Amino acid sequence: MSIGIFLSIKDLMFLAGSNNYKSCAKAHRVIRDALASNKRKLTIKEYCDFEKLNYEEILQELQRIHN
Image 1 (cartoon, rainbow, N blue to C red):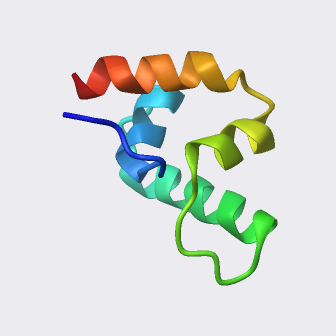
Image 2 (image 1 turned 90 degrees about the vertical axis):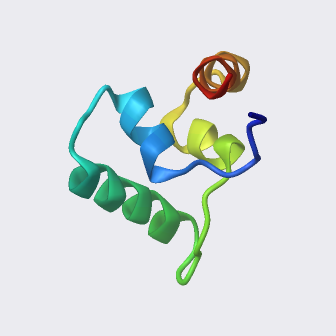
Image 3 (image 1 turned 180 degrees about the vertical axis):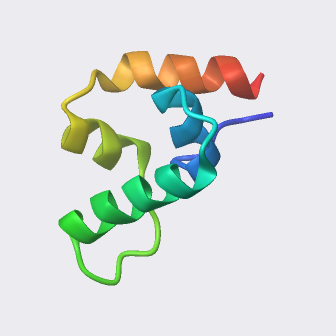
C-alpha cells in the first residue's frame, strides 16, 4: 500500500502513540483550523511544519506502517 500526501486521523494516532480516535480527531481538527478555517484535509508536510517535526523521518515512519 502506498502512502498519500494527506495525514489521516489513524496516521496521527500512530504518530502520537494513542489509541483514542476522538482525541486525535480533535488534534487533527485543531491543526487544520489553525492553518485555515474550513480546511478539510491536512497534508503530512503541513503537520510536520506545524509540530516542528522532521518531514523525512515522519514520512519514513508512515511508509513503514503502510507497507
